[in-house]
Image (tube, rainbow, N blue to C red):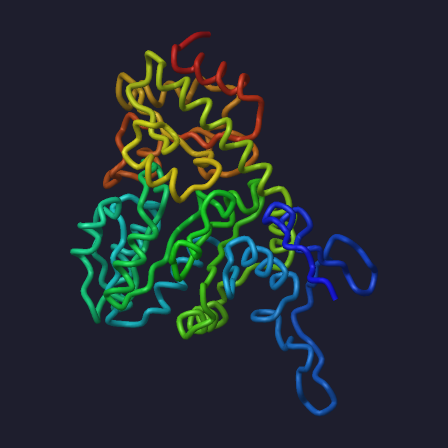
Length: 383
């Protein structure tokens, strides 16, 4: 018997692993909404389903697809990116030490700073883009997890996943990577040595700004994975089946969406680098970006759809620029098909490390000339 062909991630995503509903022969998987399931006459659950909180076939199908794209052994989907990250940190248990980057998603950094100590978790924040600083922060025998976010939001710094994995493992720690903005289209952290990959699936994996979801992808179905599964169940960090269905729908176009957004971001980054109203463009695809060489090595085929610009004239000029856009939408979040612009310091508050003159841009899949004309007009203040 011949072996089945090895399919590319793009094909696996487009066909949602090629699943066909056994009863109806539908090529789109059905939504399973049941919250409870009948026992067998001998009191067993041979279907593998007992109750809707831990057991749902639509959720499992979303997990299987994301896991295949990431090359993971086991994947858990949860109700949001924050719940996914927090479930992993809680899985470490009291007394755990964590090393996390200075540059990372602000809400998770706030949780690690303000809430994690109540669970007995201590955190040191370091410049993870410098392996020397990261290695120096490790405490062998105490450090349980190293957390990376690459590229990091919203300054788009790049951390070396392979180097961080070596350092973490040498200290007896696990490496987890928030790969939300890289996506499995451009980076597969498990193949680079990471033990866990986290996604805010709200963003690129879904891609349509209509689902809140998170994912944890484990290289091994080990004790940490089992603990995270238990915490998801006991804390109710579940994803509703309808959201899982929408997530699968979005994943089918992941490859084409992400590549289109990255192409737009690259073109805009080049043009904005020469704009008189812009003092700096932060985008790993630009050759002068300090993390460009690492990004080129570990991001295969593109540098993502996210960039930031620093506007000449400070916070007032940046906010005024955002106020003048018409095609770009002034909104939080990222990774959707529509282009978004946001003054991040306003969102993150007084303790934000984000420069006050910075605008974060999530390039969508629109015509790049429409996007360019709109941002150019907004920057120059044209009517």
